[in-house]
Length: 464
Figure 1 (cartoon, rainbow, N blue to C red):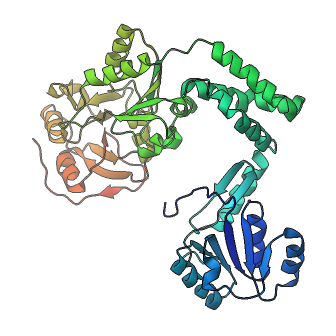
Figure 2 (cartoon, rainbow, N blue to C red):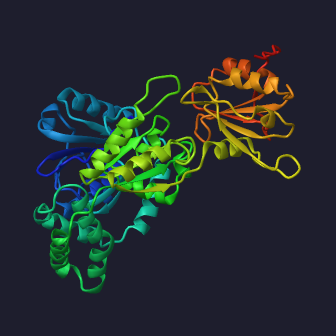
Figure 3 (cartoon, rainbow, N blue to C red):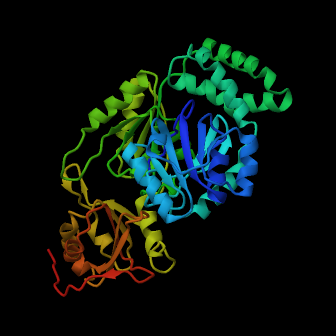
């Protein structure tokens, strides 16, 4: 994000526009919606601009901008549409320390003007960093059609009522009050009887919320899938949006965390195999502490919360503390990895069962029924196997597994930086090392990619 979006208060401020014709007129029409004082510098306004100026109440100076004209200005628009005069004005503005926008010249501008959906005081600004203005206009048109015209009326009534709403404590109770107003009661009252009774509706809602008993804190344990936010369930999205406190694992991506409110408390309790870790007892204590304080805690777990995520330990701790909780499942990494390689985890005539195992547990490398896993046609999804690859490879070889058994390595399944490496059992450890996979890796034993994947030249067979 090169251009940081902010809302600039122009009340009582002066904005300088220099130029002529369509460029200047377009900027003036937009700026005229603000309370700024607008100064236009144009030697001989073209017909359309001159006709509009007559009714707009804009101060017009029939000459070029001089350095003294920029003293105290908040913003400057260079709208000549010609490189020479626009560049001269840009130099004057920067010398005066005033941000300047050169119309249709991103590189020369200090700021850009987004496409705007205006439901004052509600405004939506859409920017593309200058990369795709046509896309910005398309999004603007879509939002114009979706957002009701009465949205601004609801917001103005809410603004006038804000001081009274502060009788509710900040946080979940106050958010619940405003949600009821904006989501249900406000639109209904506006549609049925008009804006005159919005203040009465707000007062009624406030009275009910002040008399209501504060809701007890709770914990939602949410599986957020393998990383792509588009793979979240609708319920998971809703819970993340409502959270007061977000307690998350290391594998939860920033894109998922960005769905939560900025005001939420974020606590990283990430664990890494054979590395630093937050003790499970501490995680349990954090959930209980914040829930007892009345917060809605959302405990985010990568993948599915019910697979290798120590869910039972957390729910048992919450039960012991008398905290209400629920579990929201997510897409597990095994499903995402299989989808990435275009293969089914089960297939008639190949395997009638699927083994999902972890390569190491609390005691170290995990032991399994290796003879069953080594059978021809077996399909095994191996979690947390990156550091245990040589151990897994050796155990399977000892129990008769075919060295040519296909193995597919999927790093960062479903994410934009996903990598797929085609290997086989006798090259598993060496291919993992050679590929240099640094993210979480799902090992699919018994499956080869349906489409072309990365293959590594490695003639060395390493059997532990």
